[in-house]
Amino acid sequence: ETGVTQTPRHLVMGMTNKKSLKCEQHLGHNAMYWYKQSAKKPLELMFVYSLEERVENNSVPSRFSPECPNSSHLFLHLHTLQPEDSALYLCASSQGDGTYEQYFGPGTRLTVT
Amino acid sequence: SQQGEEDPQALSIQEGENATMNCSYKTSINNLQWYRQNSGRGLVHLILIRSNEREKHSGRLRVTLDTSKKSSSLLITASRAADTASYFCATASPNYGGSQGNLIFGKGTKLSVKP
Image 1 (cartoon, helix red, strand yellow):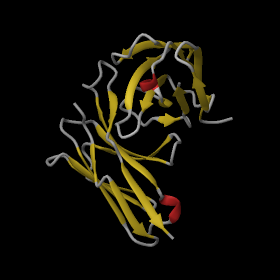
Image 2 (cartoon, chains in turn blue, yellow):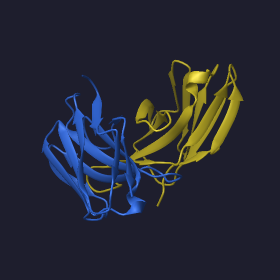
Image 3 (cartoon, rainbow over the protein chains, first blue to last red):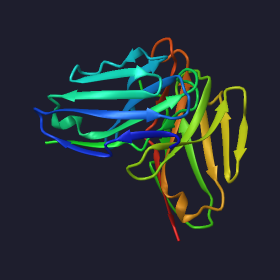
């Protein structure tokens, strides 16, 4: 399998649930990103990991918790979400820092009920 | 503050016509990138133009960059129905978002190509 994969592709969860989103990149890149895409809003950068170390946290609420166990895998742990957190969550990777071209996964469509 | 702003927000053309999308930004950049997104899917990188470049081509795509006006344009020639998607510009600045530097995306232009 090549590129960037994300699972699950769709997720419906209640506000009291705990779930995790998974991202895997097969490109040998050293940086990985989580983005949130809401309707009629620009893509919002949430977290950046470089060489498995978190280097960016753009004022994201603590109900979102990222984890990067190695350079190929990235998780986003979700708990006690709000309906406004419903969005498309995109994972991306790049070789080098964030100014390089980024390769995106297909996204996880999250609905919080 | 938001960096890239695409114009128009939506564009509808006939197959075979050319499509032009514009992007304006506010601060200095290292490079500017264009991405395409099919409905509900991930973004696909199209082309990167560095701040010292003025024009770049890739297949049917032509990108220009005017750093004095802080603007870029994406031209798709001889459009096809398969080009229907949203197109985003993203500016890359090492000074944004901490030491790593990051991309800042605009809201995108929604292109519809009718057969």
